[in-house]
Structures are given as C-alpha cells and as structure tokens.
Figure 1 (cartoon, rainbow, N blue to C red):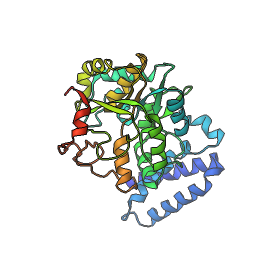
Figure 2: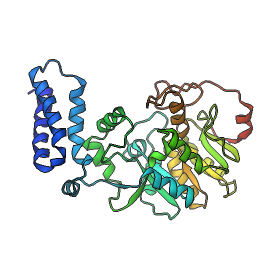
Figure 3: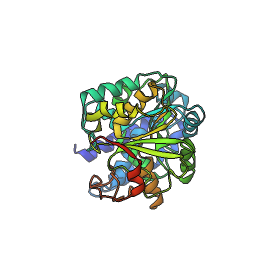
Length: 337
C-alpha cells in the first residue's frame, strides 16, 4: 500500500468516527467524502487539497464544540483578545507569551535562526510556564480548538498543518488544562481595530523598548506616535539569551513607572517574567511592529519584506539594511550586542 492509499484509508476511518460521534460535523464530513471520492477516481493527480483535507479531518475533533467531544478532546482555556487587552490596560498586568518557538526550545527542537536551542533558556521557559504571579499573564496562541476566528482560510490551513498530533502532544506536556491563559494574539496586528487596542497599552506612557539591534520598533510607521517618550536598549539580533544577565541588569536601572515593551524572541518571554517579578509592567510585544508593517503593505496576511527591519518570517529576513535616523539614534540608552 503506497502513501496515498494509506492517507485515503486514514481519511475514511476518520470520516466514520466523526459521523458516529458528532452530528454537527456531518456537512463538513460530506465535503471530505467528496474529496476522497475524487482522489479515488484519479490517484495520479493528487493535489494539495488532499493534504488540506487530511489536516482538516485530523484536527476536526478539536474544532467542534459538542460537549461530548470536548470530554474526549480537551483543549486549553484561553482568554479572548479583548479580555487580554483589558487585563493589560486596566489592571496593568504584564504578559509573557509562549508560541511554537518557545515550546520547541523547551523540547530541545531547533526552529528559528534567531534563537538556537539552549538548555538554560529551556529551563527558564518552563519556569515561566509554571509560574503564578498575580501581576503576570501567560499568553498562548489560541489555535488548539475552533479556528473560525482566523482572519483568512490561508492562516487556518497553515495552523492545521502545523498543529499535528505530535506537536499537540508536545505542547500539552507543559500546558495546565485547569488554568486560564491570556491570548498571545495581542502581539499580532490583524486589523486596524487591533492596532487601536494595542495603542491603548502605551498611550501617554514613557516607554522603554528592549529589542534586537535590527528590530527598530516604530521606525518608519506611526504605531507608537501616542507615547510620551521612548528609550531603547539594543540587544543581539540573534541568540540574545547569551547576554541575558547584562540585558536584565541594564533594564532594572530604569524607573518602575516606565512601561517596558520587549521584542526579543524567546528571551522576551523570560525577561517579561523577571521584570514583572521586580515590579515593572513588562509586555512581551513580539511581532507587533512587523505585523503592523505587513498590514500597511497590503493586509492580506502576507509577510512582506521590510528591508531595514529583522524579519524572521520572511526569506532572507535576517539581511537588514542600515538606517540613518537621528531620532532613533537619540533614543538608544544602551547597546548590548
């Protein structure tokens, strides 16, 4: 039996299981059955839709909301984006976010160029995941269950392709199903309404940006045009955790009245946690600036090139042009790279 036939058999078994388990899925299952029939008619011409259908069938039990199915397929409790913004803006909570890169580091799996696997970083990330600080939110991506909220079919298809049973099992080793997590999507600018909510975080605040030396948050756009002031600590664009103690010590020199915004990969997760424990409001803001650039350059979810900003989600995005910006240069209070 070749791989195509194995996939067909797997699809047929999944269809039978879902038909008997949940009536809500009947229409979707009929569509999958039609795909299977088309594949059977011509095995030579198997298109990409085959893989999409396979991923959809495999992920279907987690995307439906029948209580009987939820008892079998448990998923994490995650706040809405609006709830998360409310906690940050109104209750001055800090947030440390964990996504696919952080989970990979915890499991010693290389994933991103900008941060290699690191045993000490892995242990610190596990510490953050198990922490229970009153002033700190732990943010996760809300892609374990229903995907209707995804703003494009392309993103939903990509999510299903990533969250394989093996990846799901790996994540669940570290996730507490009895805990409610914040929504990590606050760092992704999916539309201009989300931008408005983001800007409430730093509205009329004195801010410290802790970022890679090629990140350049806010340069060339108006994302932070409502802050009171900006200072910057520049860190290594890659493997920033190697200089972690220096970065933390430099950050702790500033007043605790200053809002700290961190864009530094997995290092930001740990740094937000440590600074929150010290009494700062620290936001692991991640790709907020880059995703705003993508929104300004089309808004269709495409991760376009920004030549003067480090972009790990674009081919050759680590090749960054120099800039000459007097305002940006005047904001730098320390360079650790």
